[in-house]
Image 1 (cartoon, rainbow over the protein chains, first blue to last red):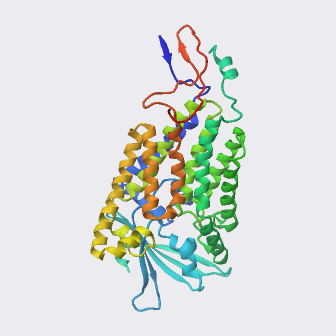
Image 2: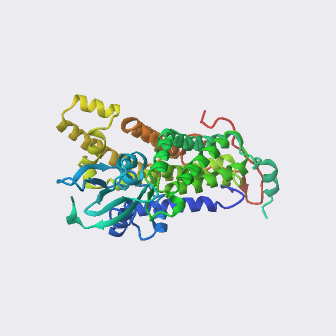
Image 3: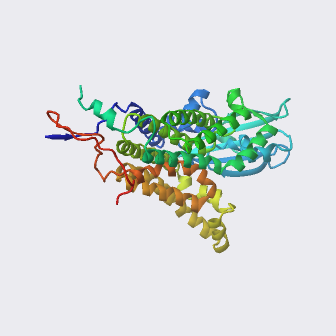
Length: 153
Length: 303
C-alpha cells in the first residue's frame, strides 16, 4: 500500500507556534462581546491605562481597527460652555494627543490642553480625562485620570 | 533510519537560497509590507517633525519608546531591510531581515508616536509570517512551503478581519452613527463627496447605516469564509475585500491593507489542487519502494 504523506526534514514547530498564536488571538477577539474582562482590558488598552506597560504591549498585535465608539472632547477651560470640539475617531482616542497632525493642531500654540476621551462597547464604557501641561523641555507632560460616567461633558 | 535521507539532501533544492518560485512569493509579501510603510512616508516625515518640535511625555511609555530617533530608526530599518530582499535570495539574509523587521515593527506597535497606527500591526503579522517562511524554507520544498504558507497567511488575514468585525458588533456601528461621523460628514474622498453632493442628510444617514452594516457583516463573514473556503478562493476573496475597502473608504488605508493583500497573494502561487495535500519529496511504499523526489517547478498558476 502506498502511503503518501508530506515529508519534510523537520517538524514545523515555528508554523505550529504561529498557528497557535493566531488561534489564541482569534479566541480573545471572539470573547470580546461575551466577556466583561476582555472588554475592560481592551478599553484600558485604548486609553493607555492597562495595569502595566508590558500587559498593554502584549495586546498591541491584536487587531482592533475601527473598533468601539470612540469619542473625544477638547475642553476649553476658559469658555463658558466648556467644549471646544467633539468628534468620533476610529480607534485609540488618545491618538488625539500623541499622534502627528492632531498633536500639532492641539499644541502648536504652547498652551496646556484638557481632552476627555470615551470608548463604548456593548454597554461598557471607559472615560479618561487627559491633561497636557507645558514642561521645561519645551514640550508637554501628560497626566490622565479615569472618570466615572456622570462626568460626561 | 529513513533510507531516503541522503537522496533528499542530494536531490532536493539548494536550501541556502530560495527557489525562483519561493523567492517570488517572499518578495511579493515583503514588497507589499514595505510599500505599505512607504505609502505613508510623507505623513511620517511630517509627524516626525511634529514630534521633534512638540515632545509629549507620558510616563506610561518607557523613555526609549517615546524617543523620536528610535521611531525613525525602527521605521527606516524595516524599509531598508525590506528593500534588500529584491537583490538577494540568500536564505540567511531573509531570516535575519524577517526577524529584525518583526522586532522593529513590534517596537513601532508600542511606540508613543505610532502605537495607534494599524499599519504597523498588519505589517508585524506579515513579518511574523515572513520569519516563519524564511526559516521553514530550510526544511521544506517549495510546494510544501507554499501549501503551509497559504494556510498560515489565510488564517492571519481571517484574524485581522475578525478584529475589525468584532469591534463593530455594537449598536453604534449597527446604526451607522460611527461611520457616518467619521466618513460621511466631512471626509474629503470621492465616494463621500459624491454622496454629499447628491443626497440629503437623512438619505446619507440611511446610506451610512447600510454601509456600516455591510462592513460588519463582510468582515465577520470573511473570517469564517477564510477558514472554510479552498485556499485559492480564500486568497482571491481577501484581495477583493481589502482592495474594495481602500477604494471605497480611504486611499490611505492602503498603508494598512497592503500587508494583508501581500499575504493573500500567497494563495495564488499555491499549485496545490483544492483539498489535496502536496507530496513534498516522496511517495513511500511499505518495504521502501523508492520514488524520485518531486520538486515543484514551472508556473505557479495552474495551466
